[in-house]
Length: 271
Image (cartoon, rainbow, N blue to C red; front, top):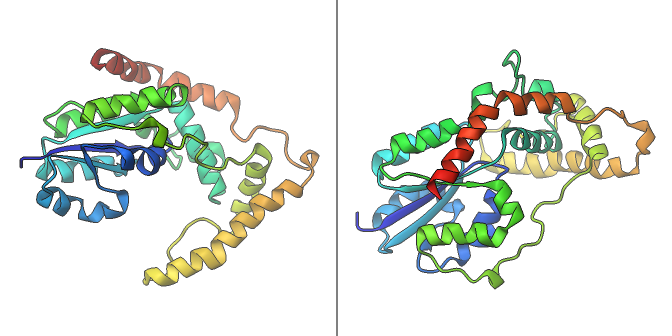
């Protein structure tokens, strides 16, 4: 193939949606193929006349499967990966899952001691994700840090632009806060509601249209009714214990400290 492919192999809760919707579409001198074309990525990559293509997709537990599949066709792809500290990443993931009605306690979500949680312990060894990209692609990955995006968004974006030889007008980017955040009280009430109500995303029907109707007609009204109704509940009615126990978060930080340092060392060495 004559074109060069750059693939932002994003992890959720690392700014992927911000990049996909507010940054990559404004890159010039590189063709960005939006995420809603994901199923067509191989075909578009093979038929595009552009010299440089930029793709982006969020992968968490599916990363190895999708990277292996993609690299079999396009081994010279240059991957881009954004990492976040394990404790910060899992805390953000837990808040998202709680908001979405999963009804899991933090220990049920991630159990470092017994590995019986929703997320497996191995999922937070992020250096393995770097090794995965190095193993399947002939080109080394560009690894960036989510903290750098938060501290200096323009500098972070410029690193990707330089890597892809793209041009970007920073004035065209909307840097306003992307997602609405819910406070601790709302999430605690949502946690309780999720333990009694079926309000997480499910697909009970074979037809996608019926699943969409079910989601927007039944799940979302209940879920957001709880979230916004929680604002009316007095704070002293809600359990004072933190949604995420401080000692549990510290245990995660300590458990993955060496692996996270390997990630930081890789970033330092390659930039």
